[in-house]
Amino acid sequence: DGGITQSPKYLFRKEGQNVTLSCEQNLNHDAMYWYRQDPGQGLRLIYYSQIVNDFQKGDIAEGYSVSREKKESFPLTVTSAQKNPTAFYLCASSGPGLRDEKLFFGSGTQLSVL
Amino acid sequence: AQSVTQLDSQVPVFEEAPVELRCNYSSSVSVYLFWYVQYPNQGLQLLLKYLSGSTLVKGINGFEAEFNKSQTSFHLRKPSVHISDTAEYFCAAQQTDSWGKLQFGAGTQVVVTP
Image (cartoon, rainbow over all chains, first blue to last red; front, side):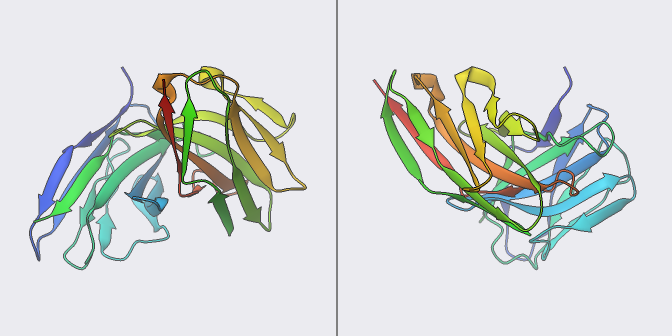
């Protein structure tokens, strides 16, 4: 079945540590996104990518980094500069092409600080 | 830029009763509007969307929403809820030229009781 796979489901970060969240899609979608979800705040866009080897900052990119070396993959690294990383992280994709407005979401990764 | 306001953070409702979730948006340009549903510890699923045309939009699971341009609203309704409709519901807006970059409301938690 086609879909978006996020791993791990739960992740713990120690102080000063970088951690990477995985997002893989087999939907042949061009665009991929990372959202952060905090209770009572809805979802906020961290980074997005419309094509391989290109990505743009969203509304809350500070303390995060991404790469898009393959169409299927869009990993998110939460760096030590992100002082409040505890949240639910959702990866999404849309397409094929860039003019499809519907987002498909993965099942999320819950990141907590030890 | 646009913003989305969901007027109720939580809506309790009895099984088989109707429910309405309120959403207002503000934007200086044309927008597309969406409702997504999130079940516990899962990603989001699209319920319905308004792009253009008829202002009454029907979605999955018996939900419908009405776009009201003069009141800048996009309220979601269901005439008779089931226990399985217990979930969090998000209203979202996207500028028509910003594919995939959604602005989400804070969410409304619907709790259906027998």
